Length: 153
Image 1 (cartoon, rainbow, N blue to C red):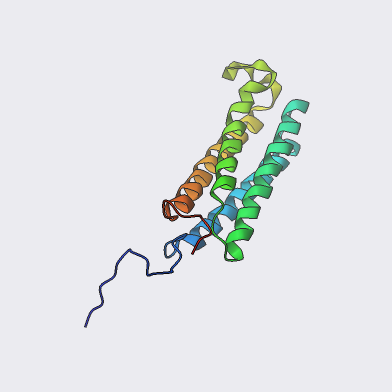
Image 2: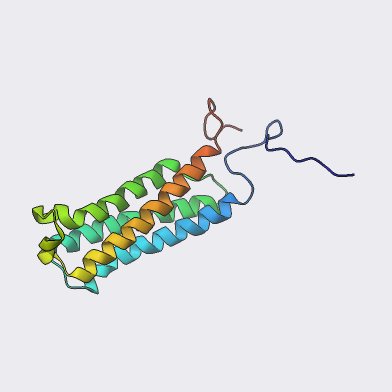
């Protein structure tokens, strides 16, 4: 009467994603892409120095495009790009650290390089983007069987 369920895939079945994960990964990739867009635009909202302007434009645009690429991949039925989302996580971590690395400042007292609002916006956006993209990279990578190519079916 009742059917038993198993986590083992049937012969020839792809294991790149488990049930329900692609939609959450697609949604989270879209959110990360919007966070990257905010990072790129935020220097025009808050007062900033020239170095922070270029850092935000380049890193924010890269996060926007890479997360958008992953969103597009998932929308078209492909698996999550673990490498791309890992790169997004690293770029988001750089966005956090760059607030003090640019112009050689290593303490909160050195916030003259940018307005306090921009610094906290970058730090919070970077934390959220890093955590979400690391989760997507982890979730996308754990579904691939060891010893097989990612695209093999």
